[in-house]
Amino acid sequence: SVVPDYLAEVLGDVEPDTSGEPAGYIPELAAADPDRLGAVFATVDGKVYGAGDVDTEFTIQSISKPFAYALALSDRGFGPVLAKVGVEPSGEAFNEISLESDTGRPRNPMINAGAITTHALAGSEGMNPAERLERVVQGLSAFAGRRLAVDESVYASEMEHAHRNLAIAHMLRSHGILAEDPTAVVDGYTRQCSLLVTTRDLAMMAATLANRGVNPLSGEQVIREPVVRQVLSVMSTCGMYDAAGDWATQVGIPAKSGVAGGLIGALPGQIGIATFSPRLDVHGNSVRGVSLFERFSSDMGLHVMEVP
Ligand code: GLN
Image (cartoon, rainbow, N blue to C red; front, side):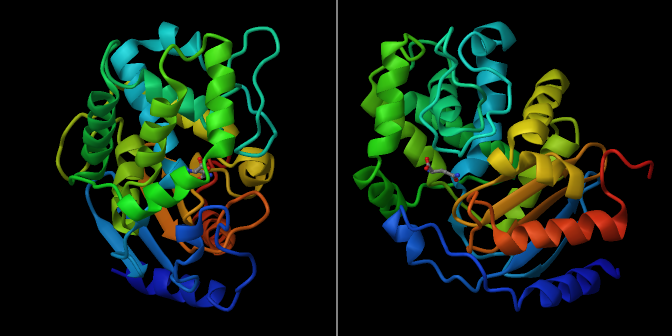
């Protein structure tokens, strides 16, 4: 196949760009090797192609959000989830302390306020925090096709500095959006964000979204098609935070970024793509990851608004 050569070539083109900085607000992430660079394509028929650091583990961070949202929709149904988390792009930073003024709902599940709420909606009502976390770990693992584990030191490092997310959770509790103990929910959400993945895992997770909710390698139906449609729609409008419009025009693939440097895109019926490069831009999106996706989209005509 020519794909690995193509991937290696594009990685080589973006490699000299050392602009941006690894996330600094989680001390353990700031210690990551900033030069790591990898990309993986996973097709819906189960072919996987990669180049660069495809097996290096890093924490999933915000890329967990669309998958936890999928689990919440599956476990609770659309109505109860939509009553607590909206689907409007916020045009704000991922950690903005903002809720809809009339309902108190977070604007969407991709910003932290929405993702903290979504974490509490995974699993069945009345689960304790450990059971809820296990549902999330098991669910995200099914997307990846292997059992994922929490990086305890990244988790502990983020929890020490989680004042902002704790403030958001307390606001949610005061509006009655969260019924649970805010500290316990942030704890579970932070563990969810601290799950270790490789670029290969992320590509499989994205490919499962691209493949109607069925993991192309394990064959497991992880979520149903209406949930896939909902998740990909929200990724396409909100997945890149306040850079969502730039992304929609330049790349045009439903996507999600994480502050550890991961980035995924899912093209329905075709392919899951993942990249890894820890230096971030001002929005918290991977600098070289965005460049890679721009190249992939234009070289291969992947923009969803283009006729293939
Ligand atoms: N755990 C991180 C946080 O809540 C995730 C943010 C991200 O990846 N954008 O701040």
